[in-house]
Length: 427
Image (cartoon, rainbow, N blue to C red; front, side, top):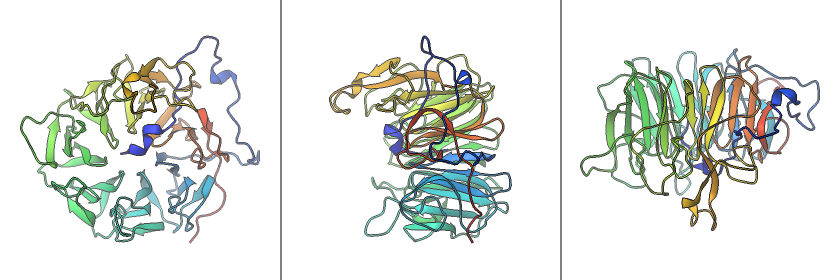
């Protein structure tokens, strides 16, 4: 789920066990201040996170969003301000899949028609990147992507979107959607097929790269490889755009996520691998590297966990074990302490010049999310949200735009439940 440079300064809330700390099970779950006590909660089937907003889907196919709405990200027909609790997306559509990018969201109907809304950044002179699949720079309600194609899966990235048809063909639209030597990327709202003979089961859009899982559970990546985000080394000089190439993890691939500067994947054996930039320890392999050092070789995430899925966000990553336990690794930037601890296990001192004259706290290996909660799905963006085993949404991290959905703008280093949405979807 994204492709996301905005997440470098994001505040997540994983926490290492600290002496004397009480588990969350012995404490009350943080309440949503100012929210009516009878507002309750709603069960969602999926959740996805953008820069400063969140969207989720109910079992009935109703989409809700909350957080920043400066460019129509919540999709309720308005623009401006913030939504501190979930609001229904306009149009009364029934969706079966949602994916949030940096400042836009795309969704699929039951028939596979793609809709997008929000902001399409990256363009100049009033023309967006084309990530919405239309020529408009932004839309405050879902608009159909300009194509007759019907898709099985969709992934909204930083400034573009990619999707896969039921026949396994991959398509992208927006910036960096076309093969190009242009350093600023080539593309627009036109839906462009990814030229390759392989058939894909799913794709994940980064910023200048994308990766996909094929029908036979193999991994392929394509696009730019500036920081090793394709997962392999280039043996010879090549143009900026690299066509789809296999990435070997030694096993079938079952889960995949991409950020602006890297990717992570999980194999059938439950091993997690990450590659790309690693200045904050976001590869989870016990090390960090210089700011521009490429890390094209997939690194196995440390620990003896059997992973079910992972989600990477450009400055940190999180993963779920087969038992539903959540772990995170990467940046631990104050003041919210993204790892939820005042004593970080590591310090990325290589960032001295980058981080205002001092190192940045980080964890180069997975640490458990506070609370002993069990989750079935997790998504990282500028913050982190997850669904409990009974479908309740919890979020943690920064909250200046209400992206945690608990009715406040107070950041949280521990998961807080999302307040139930109010009102019916607007027409």
